[in-house]
Length: 430
RNA sequence: UCCCUGGUAGCUCAAUGGCAGAGCAACCGGCUGUUAACCGGUGGGUUGUAGGUUCGAAUCCUACCCAGGGAGCCA
Image 1 (tube, rainbow, N blue to C red):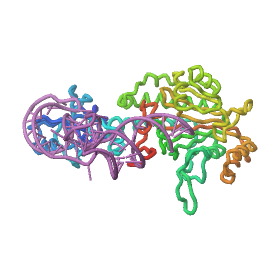
Image 2: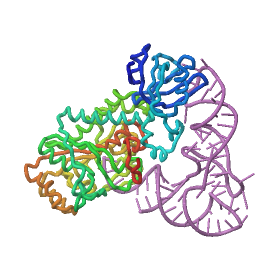
Image 3: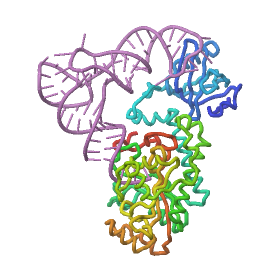
Protein backbone atom coordinates (compact mmCIF):
# COMPACT_ATOMS: atom_id res chain seq x y z
CA UNK A 1 0.00 0.00 0.00
CA UNK A 2 1.22 3.50 -0.87
CA UNK A 3 2.61 5.60 1.96
CA UNK A 4 1.61 9.26 1.53
CA UNK A 5 2.15 12.64 3.18
CA UNK A 6 -0.92 14.33 4.62
CA UNK A 7 -0.07 17.47 2.63
CA UNK A 8 -0.80 15.47 -0.56
CA UNK A 9 -3.88 13.67 0.73
CA UNK A 10 -6.25 15.47 -1.65
CA UNK A 11 -4.57 13.68 -4.59
CA UNK A 12 -5.64 10.30 -3.19
CA UNK A 13 -9.39 10.62 -2.68
CA UNK A 14 -11.01 7.20 -3.09
CA UNK A 15 -7.73 5.33 -2.64
CA UNK A 16 -6.60 3.24 0.28
CA UNK A 17 -3.35 4.74 1.64
CA UNK A 18 -0.99 4.43 4.56
CA UNK A 19 -0.02 7.33 6.86
CA UNK A 20 2.96 7.39 9.19
CA UNK A 21 2.53 9.89 11.98
CA UNK A 22 1.53 10.78 15.50
CA UNK A 23 -1.77 11.04 17.38
CA UNK A 24 -2.35 14.77 17.90
CA UNK A 25 -5.71 14.28 19.60
CA UNK A 26 -8.33 11.59 20.10
CA UNK A 27 -12.07 11.70 20.64
CA UNK A 28 -14.18 8.62 21.10
CA UNK A 29 -17.87 7.88 21.43
CA UNK A 30 -18.35 4.24 22.26
CA UNK A 31 -18.15 2.61 18.90
CA UNK A 32 -16.48 5.49 17.02
CA UNK A 33 -12.92 6.69 17.50
CA UNK A 34 -11.75 9.95 15.94
CA UNK A 35 -7.99 10.28 15.68
CA UNK A 36 -6.42 13.57 14.67
CA UNK A 37 -3.23 12.39 13.01
CA UNK A 38 -0.28 14.65 12.19
CA UNK A 39 2.79 13.65 10.19
CA UNK A 40 4.79 16.88 10.07
CA UNK A 41 3.26 17.87 6.73
CA UNK A 42 -0.29 18.34 7.96
CA UNK A 43 -3.22 17.12 10.02
CA UNK A 44 -6.08 14.79 9.14
CA UNK A 45 -8.93 13.16 11.01
CA UNK A 46 -8.98 9.36 10.92
CA UNK A 47 -12.23 7.60 11.86
CA UNK A 48 -12.39 4.06 13.16
CA UNK A 49 -15.84 2.43 13.27
CA UNK A 50 -16.52 -0.59 15.47
CA UNK A 51 -17.75 -3.51 13.41
CA UNK A 52 -16.28 -2.18 10.16
CA UNK A 53 -12.72 -3.14 11.08
CA UNK A 54 -11.40 -6.12 13.06
CA UNK A 55 -12.19 -5.74 16.79
CA UNK A 56 -8.49 -6.00 17.50
CA UNK A 57 -7.75 -2.90 15.38
CA UNK A 58 -10.61 -0.95 16.89
CA UNK A 59 -9.36 -1.80 20.37
CA UNK A 60 -5.88 -0.53 19.42
CA UNK A 61 -7.33 2.78 18.18
CA UNK A 62 -9.24 3.20 21.41
CA UNK A 63 -6.10 2.66 23.49
CA UNK A 64 -3.93 5.19 21.65
CA UNK A 65 -2.64 8.11 23.70
CA UNK A 66 -1.76 11.67 22.71
CA UNK A 67 1.46 11.75 20.60
CA UNK A 68 1.66 7.97 20.17
CA UNK A 69 3.37 7.11 16.90
CA UNK A 70 1.31 5.03 14.50
CA UNK A 71 1.08 3.65 11.02
CA UNK A 72 -2.56 3.90 10.02
CA UNK A 73 -4.16 2.77 6.79
CA UNK A 74 -7.53 3.71 5.40
CA UNK A 75 -9.58 5.04 2.54
CA UNK A 76 -9.35 8.76 1.79
CA UNK A 77 -12.72 10.50 1.67
CA UNK A 78 -13.85 14.07 1.25
CA UNK A 79 -16.10 14.91 4.20
CA UNK A 80 -17.38 18.34 5.20
CA UNK A 81 -17.68 17.25 8.84
CA UNK A 82 -13.93 16.63 9.10
CA UNK A 83 -11.50 19.41 10.01
CA UNK A 84 -9.54 20.09 6.83
CA UNK A 85 -12.25 18.68 4.56
CA UNK A 86 -10.75 15.21 4.15
CA UNK A 87 -10.73 12.21 6.43
CA UNK A 88 -9.38 8.71 6.55
CA UNK A 89 -11.79 5.79 7.04
CA UNK A 90 -9.53 3.52 9.05
CA UNK A 91 -9.00 -0.01 7.78
CA UNK A 92 -6.05 -0.91 9.96
CA UNK A 93 -3.70 0.52 12.55
CA UNK A 94 -0.27 -0.37 13.88
CA UNK A 95 0.81 1.45 17.03
CA UNK A 96 4.58 1.90 16.78
CA UNK A 97 4.98 3.39 20.22
CA UNK A 98 2.36 4.15 22.87
CA UNK A 99 3.30 7.56 24.27
CA UNK A 100 3.50 8.10 28.01
CA UNK A 101 1.27 10.72 29.60
CA UNK A 102 1.95 13.77 27.44
CA UNK A 103 2.87 16.92 29.36
CA UNK A 104 1.47 19.43 26.88
CA UNK A 105 -2.32 19.39 26.76
CA UNK A 106 -4.33 21.20 24.12
CA UNK A 107 -5.32 23.81 26.70
CA UNK A 108 -3.60 27.08 27.52
CA UNK A 109 -0.13 27.03 29.02
CA UNK A 110 2.29 29.59 30.35
CA UNK A 111 5.49 30.49 28.50
CA UNK A 112 7.86 29.17 31.18
CA UNK A 113 6.18 25.78 31.15
CA UNK A 114 6.19 25.57 27.36
CA UNK A 115 9.85 26.60 27.18
CA UNK A 116 10.75 23.74 29.55
CA UNK A 117 9.10 21.43 27.01
CA UNK A 118 10.33 23.30 23.93
CA UNK A 119 11.45 20.01 22.33
CA UNK A 120 7.81 18.84 22.37
CA UNK A 121 6.21 22.28 21.94
CA UNK A 122 7.65 22.33 18.40
CA UNK A 123 5.05 19.68 17.47
CA UNK A 124 2.14 22.11 17.77
CA UNK A 125 0.69 23.69 14.61
CA UNK A 126 1.67 27.24 15.52
CA UNK A 127 5.29 26.44 16.32
CA UNK A 128 5.66 24.26 13.22
CA UNK A 129 4.26 27.10 11.10
CA UNK A 130 6.77 29.56 12.54
CA UNK A 131 9.64 27.20 11.77
CA UNK A 132 8.42 26.77 8.21
CA UNK A 133 8.23 30.54 7.73
CA UNK A 134 11.72 30.88 9.23
CA UNK A 135 12.92 28.32 6.72
CA UNK A 136 11.28 30.26 3.86
CA UNK A 137 12.88 33.52 5.02
CA UNK A 138 16.34 31.92 5.18
CA UNK A 139 15.86 30.44 1.71
CA UNK A 140 14.61 33.78 0.32
CA UNK A 141 17.59 35.69 1.73
CA UNK A 142 20.05 33.22 0.25
CA UNK A 143 18.31 33.10 -3.13
CA UNK A 144 18.19 36.91 -3.31
CA UNK A 145 21.89 37.32 -2.57
CA UNK A 146 22.96 34.36 -4.69
CA UNK A 147 21.02 35.73 -7.69
CA UNK A 148 22.96 38.97 -7.35
CA UNK A 149 26.18 36.97 -7.41
CA UNK A 150 27.13 37.43 -3.77
CA UNK A 151 29.47 34.70 -2.51
CA UNK A 152 28.69 32.98 0.78
CA UNK A 153 31.83 33.19 2.92
CA UNK A 154 31.62 31.60 6.35
CA UNK A 155 33.03 33.71 9.17
CA UNK A 156 34.74 32.03 12.12
CA UNK A 157 32.76 31.55 15.30
CA UNK A 158 35.79 31.30 17.60
CA UNK A 159 37.54 34.66 17.53
CA UNK A 160 40.60 36.06 19.28
CA UNK A 161 39.00 39.35 20.34
CA UNK A 162 35.93 41.50 20.21
CA UNK A 163 34.81 42.67 16.79
CA UNK A 164 33.44 45.99 17.95
CA UNK A 165 34.76 46.16 21.48
CA UNK A 166 31.37 47.16 22.85
CA UNK A 167 29.12 44.29 23.85
CA UNK A 168 30.00 41.59 26.34
CA UNK A 169 31.29 38.38 24.81
CA UNK A 170 31.10 34.75 25.82
CA UNK A 171 34.57 33.41 26.46
CA UNK A 172 35.83 29.87 26.26
CA UNK A 173 39.10 28.01 26.84
CA UNK A 174 41.20 27.79 23.72
CA UNK A 175 44.06 25.52 24.72
CA UNK A 176 46.36 27.83 26.68
CA UNK A 177 44.53 31.05 25.87
CA UNK A 178 41.01 32.48 25.70
CA UNK A 179 38.76 32.60 22.66
CA UNK A 180 35.46 34.45 22.29
CA UNK A 181 32.27 33.46 20.53
CA UNK A 182 31.73 35.74 17.57
CA UNK A 183 29.40 38.72 18.00
CA UNK A 184 29.69 39.61 14.30
CA UNK A 185 31.36 38.29 11.17
CA UNK A 186 31.61 41.75 9.65
CA UNK A 187 35.33 42.44 9.93
CA UNK A 188 36.04 39.11 8.25
CA UNK A 189 33.52 39.93 5.55
CA UNK A 190 35.39 43.15 4.83
CA UNK A 191 38.47 41.04 4.14
CA UNK A 192 36.43 38.70 1.95
CA UNK A 193 34.86 41.61 0.04
CA UNK A 194 38.33 42.82 -0.91
CA UNK A 195 38.95 39.34 -2.36
CA UNK A 196 35.58 38.54 -3.96
CA UNK A 197 33.72 41.84 -4.34
CA UNK A 198 30.27 40.98 -2.97
CA UNK A 199 30.06 38.52 -0.08
CA UNK A 200 27.90 37.56 2.86
CA UNK A 201 28.00 35.35 5.89
CA UNK A 202 24.98 33.74 7.54
CA UNK A 203 25.53 32.21 10.90
CA UNK A 204 24.99 32.28 14.63
CA UNK A 205 26.08 35.26 16.70
CA UNK A 206 26.59 35.47 20.45
CA UNK A 207 26.10 38.33 22.86
CA UNK A 208 26.55 37.94 26.60
CA UNK A 209 24.50 41.06 27.31
CA UNK A 210 22.10 40.62 30.20
CA UNK A 211 19.22 41.84 28.08
CA UNK A 212 15.80 40.75 29.25
CA UNK A 213 13.37 41.97 26.65
CA UNK A 214 11.17 40.55 23.92
CA UNK A 215 13.74 41.59 21.30
CA UNK A 216 16.85 39.85 22.64
CA UNK A 217 18.48 36.44 22.54
CA UNK A 218 22.01 35.55 23.63
CA UNK A 219 22.41 33.37 20.52
CA UNK A 220 20.84 34.58 17.29
CA UNK A 221 21.35 34.33 13.53
CA UNK A 222 22.59 37.18 11.44
CA UNK A 223 23.09 37.76 7.70
CA UNK A 224 25.97 40.11 7.00
CA UNK A 225 26.50 41.18 3.38
CA UNK A 226 29.55 43.30 2.57
CA UNK A 227 30.24 45.02 -0.76
CA UNK A 228 33.38 46.59 -2.15
CA UNK A 229 32.95 49.78 -4.22
CA UNK A 230 29.49 50.46 -2.76
CA UNK A 231 28.53 53.58 -0.82
CA UNK A 232 25.81 54.17 1.78
CA UNK A 233 23.19 54.87 -0.87
CA UNK A 234 23.88 51.64 -2.76
CA UNK A 235 23.83 49.81 0.56
CA UNK A 236 20.33 51.05 1.42
CA UNK A 237 19.01 50.17 -2.05
CA UNK A 238 20.12 46.58 -1.61
CA UNK A 239 18.54 46.41 1.83
CA UNK A 240 15.10 47.63 0.75
CA UNK A 241 15.11 45.25 -2.21
CA UNK A 242 16.14 42.33 -0.01
CA UNK A 243 13.48 42.99 2.64
CA UNK A 244 10.77 43.47 0.00
CA UNK A 245 11.74 40.27 -1.79
CA UNK A 246 11.68 38.27 1.44
CA UNK A 247 8.28 39.61 2.52
CA UNK A 248 6.66 39.06 -0.88
CA UNK A 249 8.02 35.54 -1.13
CA UNK A 250 6.68 34.54 2.30
CA UNK A 251 3.29 36.02 1.36
CA UNK A 252 3.28 33.89 -1.79
CA UNK A 253 4.75 30.64 -0.53
CA UNK A 254 3.54 30.46 3.09
CA UNK A 255 -0.10 31.55 3.03
CA UNK A 256 -1.22 28.61 5.16
CA UNK A 257 1.45 29.14 7.78
CA UNK A 258 0.71 32.88 8.00
CA UNK A 259 -2.94 31.96 8.56
CA UNK A 260 -1.95 29.47 11.26
CA UNK A 261 -0.05 32.15 13.18
CA UNK A 262 -3.01 34.50 12.56
CA UNK A 263 -0.91 37.18 10.88
CA UNK A 264 -2.84 40.12 9.46
CA UNK A 265 -1.06 40.30 6.09
CA UNK A 266 -2.56 43.62 5.00
CA UNK A 267 0.42 45.72 5.98
CA UNK A 268 2.93 43.18 4.65
CA UNK A 269 1.45 43.34 1.16
CA UNK A 270 2.56 46.98 0.79
CA UNK A 271 6.21 46.24 1.56
CA UNK A 272 7.89 47.34 -1.69
CA UNK A 273 10.77 49.73 -2.45
CA UNK A 274 11.55 52.52 -1.97
CA UNK A 275 11.48 52.77 1.82
CA UNK A 276 11.38 56.21 3.45
CA UNK A 277 14.73 57.67 4.55
CA UNK A 278 15.01 59.95 7.54
CA UNK A 279 18.24 61.49 8.75
CA UNK A 280 19.12 61.29 12.42
CA UNK A 281 18.66 65.09 12.61
CA UNK A 282 15.14 64.78 11.17
CA UNK A 283 14.37 61.86 13.48
CA UNK A 284 15.24 63.98 16.51
CA UNK A 285 12.89 66.70 15.20
CA UNK A 286 10.10 64.17 14.70
CA UNK A 287 10.51 62.90 18.26
CA UNK A 288 10.50 66.40 19.71
CA UNK A 289 7.42 67.34 17.67
CA UNK A 290 5.66 64.26 19.05
CA UNK A 291 6.40 65.44 22.56
CA UNK A 292 9.24 63.00 23.24
CA UNK A 293 12.10 64.57 25.16
CA UNK A 294 15.21 63.68 23.22
CA UNK A 295 18.58 65.35 22.98
CA UNK A 296 20.77 65.33 19.85
CA UNK A 297 23.69 62.95 20.40
CA UNK A 298 21.84 60.20 22.27
CA UNK A 299 20.90 56.84 20.84
CA UNK A 300 17.24 55.90 20.40
CA UNK A 301 15.59 53.63 22.96
CA UNK A 302 12.97 51.02 22.16
CA UNK A 303 10.17 53.50 22.77
CA UNK A 304 11.76 56.14 20.54
CA UNK A 305 12.12 53.61 17.73
CA UNK A 306 8.45 52.71 18.00
CA UNK A 307 7.38 56.37 17.81
CA UNK A 308 9.58 56.90 14.74
CA UNK A 309 8.41 53.72 13.00
CA UNK A 310 4.77 54.62 13.63
CA UNK A 311 5.13 57.68 11.39
CA UNK A 312 5.50 55.40 8.37
CA UNK A 313 3.61 52.58 6.74
CA UNK A 314 6.82 50.99 5.43
CA UNK A 315 10.07 50.10 7.19
CA UNK A 316 12.07 53.31 7.61
CA UNK A 317 15.81 53.99 7.30
CA UNK A 318 17.32 56.30 9.91
CA UNK A 319 20.69 57.41 8.53
CA UNK A 320 23.70 59.53 9.48
CA UNK A 321 23.82 58.94 13.22
CA UNK A 322 26.28 60.86 15.41
CA UNK A 323 29.71 59.32 14.95
CA UNK A 324 30.19 59.01 18.71
CA UNK A 325 27.34 56.53 19.24
CA UNK A 326 28.28 54.19 16.39
CA UNK A 327 31.02 51.58 15.99
CA UNK A 328 34.63 52.67 15.48
CA UNK A 329 34.74 51.61 11.81
CA UNK A 330 31.86 53.82 10.58
CA UNK A 331 32.94 56.33 7.95
CA UNK A 332 32.31 59.96 8.91
CA UNK A 333 30.25 62.08 6.53
CA UNK A 334 32.94 64.07 4.62
CA UNK A 335 30.85 67.26 4.88
CA UNK A 336 30.04 66.81 8.61
CA UNK A 337 32.48 64.56 10.49
CA UNK A 338 30.32 64.58 13.64
CA UNK A 339 27.86 62.33 11.83
CA UNK A 340 28.64 59.10 10.01
CA UNK A 341 27.46 57.18 6.95
CA UNK A 342 25.50 54.67 9.00
CA UNK A 343 21.87 53.59 8.77
CA UNK A 344 19.48 51.41 10.73
CA UNK A 345 16.27 49.96 9.31
CA UNK A 346 13.30 50.10 11.68
CA UNK A 347 10.47 47.65 11.04
CA UNK A 348 6.84 48.80 11.31
CA UNK A 349 4.39 47.78 14.02
CA UNK A 350 6.87 48.23 16.87
CA UNK A 351 9.28 45.48 15.84
CA UNK A 352 12.25 47.82 16.07
CA UNK A 353 15.67 47.65 14.48
CA UNK A 354 15.99 44.75 12.04
CA UNK A 355 19.09 45.98 10.18
CA UNK A 356 22.14 47.97 11.23
CA UNK A 357 24.78 48.95 8.72
CA UNK A 358 26.80 51.59 6.98
CA UNK A 359 29.83 52.59 4.99
CA UNK A 360 33.19 51.66 6.53
CA UNK A 361 36.24 53.82 7.04
CA UNK A 362 38.64 53.32 4.12
CA UNK A 363 41.31 55.87 5.11
CA UNK A 364 44.15 54.03 6.91
CA UNK A 365 45.19 57.01 9.04
CA UNK A 366 41.67 57.66 10.29
CA UNK A 367 41.09 53.99 11.07
CA UNK A 368 44.34 53.78 13.04
CA UNK A 369 43.29 56.85 15.02
CA UNK A 370 39.87 55.37 15.78
CA UNK A 371 41.36 52.09 17.00
CA UNK A 372 43.48 54.14 19.42
CA UNK A 373 40.57 56.35 20.53
CA UNK A 374 38.49 53.27 21.31
CA UNK A 375 41.32 51.63 23.27
CA UNK A 376 41.31 48.58 21.03
CA UNK A 377 44.37 46.30 21.05
CA UNK A 378 46.36 47.25 17.95
CA UNK A 379 47.95 43.82 17.46
CA UNK A 380 44.52 42.17 17.25
CA UNK A 381 43.41 44.63 14.59
CA UNK A 382 46.63 44.56 12.57
CA UNK A 383 45.08 42.34 9.89
CA UNK A 384 42.03 44.63 9.72
CA UNK A 385 44.35 47.63 9.21
CA UNK A 386 46.04 45.74 6.36
CA UNK A 387 42.78 45.95 4.37
CA UNK A 388 43.39 49.73 4.25
CA UNK A 389 47.09 49.40 3.49
CA UNK A 390 46.78 47.19 0.43
CA UNK A 391 44.33 48.69 -2.04
CA UNK A 392 41.72 50.31 0.20
CA UNK A 393 38.35 51.03 -1.46
CA UNK A 394 35.01 52.49 -0.37
CA UNK A 395 32.87 49.65 0.93
CA UNK A 396 29.63 49.09 2.80
CA UNK A 397 27.61 46.39 4.43
CA UNK A 398 24.97 45.57 6.99
CA UNK A 399 23.78 43.00 9.48
CA UNK A 400 20.22 41.68 9.44
CA UNK A 401 18.85 39.99 12.57
CA UNK A 402 17.02 36.90 11.33
CA UNK A 403 14.86 36.35 14.41
CA UNK A 404 13.63 39.95 14.47
CA UNK A 405 12.61 39.64 10.81
CA UNK A 406 10.81 36.35 11.53
CA UNK A 407 9.03 37.96 14.51
CA UNK A 408 7.91 40.90 12.38
CA UNK A 409 6.73 38.83 9.41
CA UNK A 410 4.91 36.34 11.66
CA UNK A 411 3.53 39.06 13.93
CA UNK A 412 4.90 37.38 17.04
CA UNK A 413 5.38 39.53 20.11
CA UNK A 414 8.42 37.70 21.50
CA UNK A 415 11.53 36.70 19.58
CA UNK A 416 11.97 33.47 21.59
CA UNK A 417 9.33 31.69 19.47
CA UNK A 418 11.17 32.44 16.23
CA UNK A 419 14.18 30.17 16.87
CA UNK A 420 13.90 26.40 17.47
CA UNK A 421 15.79 26.33 20.76
CA UNK A 422 16.15 29.85 22.18
CA UNK A 423 19.07 30.82 24.37
CA UNK A 424 17.98 33.46 26.85
CA UNK A 425 19.50 35.18 29.84
CA UNK A 426 19.01 32.22 32.19
CA UNK A 427 17.72 29.57 29.85
CA UNK A 428 19.94 27.05 28.12
CA UNK A 429 17.57 24.03 28.41
CA UNK A 430 16.53 22.13 26.40
C1' U B 1 23.29 45.55 36.89
C1' C B 2 18.65 48.38 38.08
C1' C B 3 13.02 49.03 38.38
C1' C B 4 7.98 46.70 38.35
C1' U B 5 4.91 42.13 38.62
C1' G B 6 4.40 37.14 39.83
C1' G B 7 5.50 31.71 41.85
C1' U B 8 -0.77 27.25 45.12
C1' A B 9 -2.33 19.69 42.14
C1' G B 10 0.87 17.50 35.76
C1' C B 11 -1.47 22.32 33.39
C1' U B 12 -4.62 27.06 33.84
C1' C B 13 -6.20 29.49 38.01
C1' A B 14 -9.28 30.58 42.89
C1' A B 15 -8.76 31.03 48.20
C1' U B 16 -5.91 38.19 51.55
C1' G B 17 -4.61 36.04 58.72
C1' G B 18 -8.98 30.98 60.51
C1' C B 19 -11.04 23.35 57.31
C1' A B 20 -6.27 24.36 50.40
C1' G B 21 -10.53 24.40 46.03
C1' A B 22 -12.36 24.35 40.66
C1' G B 23 -11.77 23.34 35.41
C1' C B 24 -8.64 20.56 32.24
C1' A B 25 -5.14 16.33 32.03
C1' A B 26 -4.52 11.04 34.11
C1' C B 27 -7.31 6.55 35.58
C1' C B 28 -12.38 3.72 35.66
C1' G B 29 -17.31 3.59 33.41
C1' G B 30 -21.06 5.45 29.48
C1' C B 31 -22.15 7.22 24.51
C1' U B 32 -22.39 5.60 16.27
C1' G B 33 -20.19 12.11 13.79
C1' U B 34 -16.80 14.05 17.51
C1' U B 35 -14.62 19.37 16.39
C1' A B 36 -9.79 22.07 22.77
C1' A B 37 -16.26 16.40 22.24
C1' C B 38 -19.66 15.41 26.16
C1' C B 39 -21.77 12.85 30.86
C1' G B 40 -20.77 10.13 35.74
C1' G B 41 -16.95 8.54 39.16
C1' U B 42 -11.64 7.96 41.38
C1' G B 43 -6.82 9.36 42.75
C1' G B 44 -3.83 13.74 43.02
C1' G B 45 -0.63 19.17 47.63
C1' U B 46 6.23 20.07 52.19
C1' U B 47 1.37 26.64 48.65
C1' G B 48 9.38 28.33 44.87
C1' U B 49 13.45 27.81 49.06
C1' A B 50 15.24 29.26 54.01
C1' G B 51 14.23 32.00 58.20
C1' G B 52 10.95 35.34 61.11
C1' U B 53 6.10 37.63 63.21
C1' U B 54 1.50 35.28 65.18
C1' C B 55 -2.74 31.27 69.31
C1' G B 56 -2.92 30.36 63.99
C1' A B 57 0.57 32.00 57.63
C1' A B 58 -0.70 30.23 50.71
C1' U B 59 -1.89 35.16 52.82
C1' C B 60 2.31 39.68 56.79
C1' C B 61 8.08 40.64 57.11
C1' U B 62 13.48 39.50 55.48
C1' A B 63 16.90 37.06 52.26
C1' C B 64 17.66 33.99 48.20
C1' C B 65 16.06 31.18 43.67
C1' C B 66 13.11 31.14 39.27
C1' A B 67 9.84 33.39 35.65
C1' G B 68 7.39 37.60 33.05
C1' G B 69 7.60 42.87 31.54
C1' G B 70 10.78 47.10 31.07
C1' A B 71 15.62 50.18 31.36
C1' G B 72 20.59 50.14 29.67
C1' C B 73 22.95 47.62 25.21
C1' C B 74 22.04 45.95 20.64
C1' A B 75 20.29 42.63 15.45
